[in-house]
Structure formats: C-alpha cells, structure tokens
Image (cartoon, rainbow, N blue to C red; front, side, top):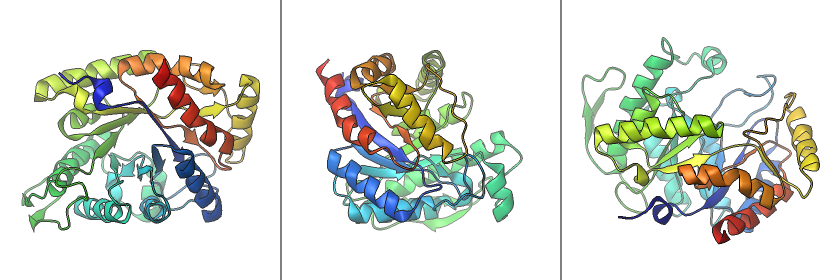
Amino acid sequence: MTSRRDRHPLRVGALLWPQKTTWAELREAVLAADAAGLDSLWTWDHLHAIVGDPDQGIFEGWALVAAWAAITERAQLGLMVGANTFRNPGLTAKTAVTIDHVSGGRAWLGIGGAWFEHEHVAHGIDFGSGFGERLDWLEEAVAAMAGLLRGEDVTSADGARYRFRELRHRPLPVRGPGHLPIMIGGGGEKKTLRTVARHADGWNVTGSLETMKRKVDVLHGHCADVGRDMAEIEFTLFPYVCLRDDPREARAALRERLARHGDDYDPDPAVDFLGPEERVAEMWRPYVALGFTHLIPDLAAPFDRETIERLPQLRALMAGA
C-alpha cells in the first residue's frame, strides 16, 4: 500500500494576503517565491479586508490567481479558499480550468463555505440562514464541480440550491479528466469534514496540535463511512511563519507586518512558527506525523522576502531528517 508520505511529499508554499497591498508588491513577491522554488502560491477570496478595517483595499482572488498564472513558471496556484457563496459552481469550475490552461496545468480549485457576513451584506450576496445551510450548499456545489472536472454531464433539476440543465464543460483540465485538484478549507466536524472525505484532493486547516489530532480522527471516521482512503487527501497547514536566526527578531518582524493591517499581534507559541529553520522544523514535525506535509505560511504585506527565500531550506532540512 502506498504511504501518505509517498503520495504527498513535503512541500512549502505561501499564502499572500491580497489586502492593503499593491499589484507591484504582489507581483514582486510572487516572482520571488516562484524563483526561490516554493511549491505553491495562494491568496484569499474576499471582497472586503478581513484583518483590521474592512474598508482597506483588497483585490479579487481569482483575478489575482489568473495574473499569477501568466507570470510564474513553477508553483501551483489557487485560492485558500474560494467562497462558494460568491459564484455559481459551474462558473467556478470554468474559471479554475481556464487558469489551469493559462498556467500549463498548475491550478487548484480551492473552495469553502464562506464566513464573512459583512462582505455578503455589502454586496447583496445571499449569506444563507447560517453555517449549516452554507455547508449544505458547499456539499452540493463541490459534488457538481468534481463532476464537471471529470468531464461528466451534470444535471440537477431539483437541487436544494443549484439547478443545472445538461451541463458539460470543455476544455477539460490540462492533466486530464479529474486531474485539477479540489482543496476544501475548514474544520467543521459534522459537515465540512464529511465533504472533504467525499470529494477533496486537499484539505486546508490550522490550529493547535491537539485540535488537529481531533480533526484528523474525525476525518478518518468520515472517510471510513464513505469508503475513502484518507491517504489520498493532501493535508495543508497555514500557520504564521517567520524565518529569522533569532526568534525575537522573527516575532518583531511579524508584529510589524500585521500592524500595517490594524492587527495587534499576540504571539501564540502553539501555532506560530517563528525562528530559524531548525526551530520551525521541530514545530512542524509533529504535524507531519499527523499527515500535514504541505506547509503554507500566512504572509501579510509587506511580504517577507527573507522568509520566502529561506522556506526551501526548511523543506530540505525536513526532507533530510
């Protein structure tokens, strides 16, 4: 049997905040990350800033990923994660496949139930009756998108939320039918993790080691219920990461960046990976033992070039252990 580590080697990426920044800053950071050899690049899908004042400037997510696809060569690309409520799932699947072709087969379809009520109210987007309903919508949407990515006809004349009529998409993903991976974000134990078990190629979440142990156990149960090998799903983790030789310098650098966004940073040693590569590796290893082989640091503008350039060294150190 193929092990999880055989299926999912250690990888490092970066999640670049699209708020309170400029296209020039984002472009420079993305090109630096791609040149440094990061495995993946991600951004949010929000219409208003989610850290600090909501009226701070922010860019739209899929448009940014499309722009990145045209200027990068190596890194895989996606939203961490898309707001299912914003778009019809057929449109989301079509957008992801278009970006997959622009990038030469490097796109992921990141999706989640959505949580930020402010942006929904401001834009007149239906927020549903609560998390439960939005997660029901997510399950229905992801099932449809997975079918479209496999090249199937999708017909749902009586769906609770979505209705399709003999819907089929062409072209298919660059890597072939079903080979544009779906990343689902969130840790809801009753509904989100059930949807992960049924449909996801990747799962994105963060939290303390104790919390992640419980989430993995719950996901394992859902996978058993649907007859899915949990090892098929790539686990991704997005803590704050700041690589410096001195952990105190790392904390100061992170605090300074978050202050730009109006965030009064309070370090949490349980979930913040700060310091030199050796120290951060020690923090990551117990998560890797749980299956979290893909580390995706949460990076606020101004983007931390030192961390970006040192992340491949962290991956090499972990791989050599």
